[in-house]
Amino acid sequence: MTAHVTAERPAISDPTSEKPVVPYGKLEEVFEDIRTHVLYDHELYGCLNCGICTATCPSAHYYDYSPREIVQLLWTENLEGIYDAMQEKIWACAQCYTCAARCPFGNSPGGLVMLMRETAIKHNMESARNVLRPFSRVMLKLISTGNQLAPDMINKDHFADWGPNISKVDAPLKILRKAIPMPTLNTTATAWEVNLKTSIELYTIWEMTGVLKQLEGIDENLFDVITDIMDEKREDWKDFQAEQEESKDE
Image (cartoon, rainbow, N blue to C red):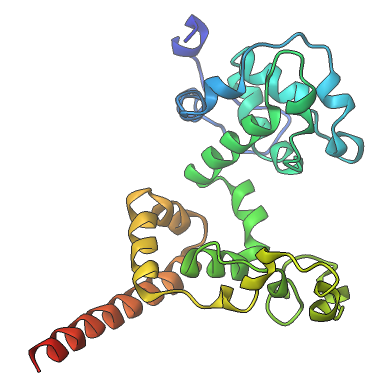
């Protein structure tokens, strides 16, 4: 790390803003979590400041967002700018990775944004809470049953909070799929069904990787609901194992 990152600095604040002061140590901690991520060196190689990534970025055309700015902030280790970008700008990225495909240096601004988003969740930033709050039902499905998503689930009955246009989804999907008989669409009916043992293994992964701890900081109510589901399924698994042992003895 460069000297300006490790040097003692006063707290950072904007005298014209009512936002609370952010200690410089906090800025260092946030950047260190991003920089030490296992993927960081695979996403950032340098920057020519050419602007090709921003010129081809869909989000840059509609929002106050620039992939080039993200790369420059991290490349120059601008701690204040990085922290500020994590409050709003990084959530405008569409994660399409057009920037990565066009960058002459091989950078992936979209990948860097993903690392910054993970760090924002880890540090319980309000921006992360605001973005994830409308999707609590989606998160409940993903965390409690895994990534068993299927096209049929994207409808107003199952995921009313999926997005503002979900109520417009009204199509005879089964009939339309007969015109495109893809093998992967055979799982649309079974995606709701998850093996009990698989669920228990999934919960263990969430606990060991720190996902549940991060969820508790972002949405405590959702955390309580999911832990209740986990406890219930673990009890079901114990009962199932006990029944299997009894059947063996008989």
